[in-house]
Image (tube, rainbow, N blue to C red; front, side, top):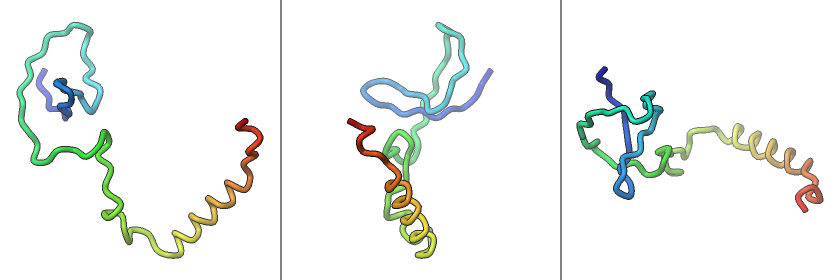
Length: 80
């Protein structure tokens, strides 16, 4: 079986970004092809700057209100 997967090289080890679906101790052959850019984090989250302007002011206001409403229901004594 031949397939291509993405992995990240960190601390001397290749870490697959998806399940390999291999049997324990199964021998494989690895071919390395470097991608054009390193990932920034484990999930390659876009920077905040990339997200700027992606929602309207109205959506932002509704989201802020939903967060405020949810936090008003938190009982801080439960966390002690």
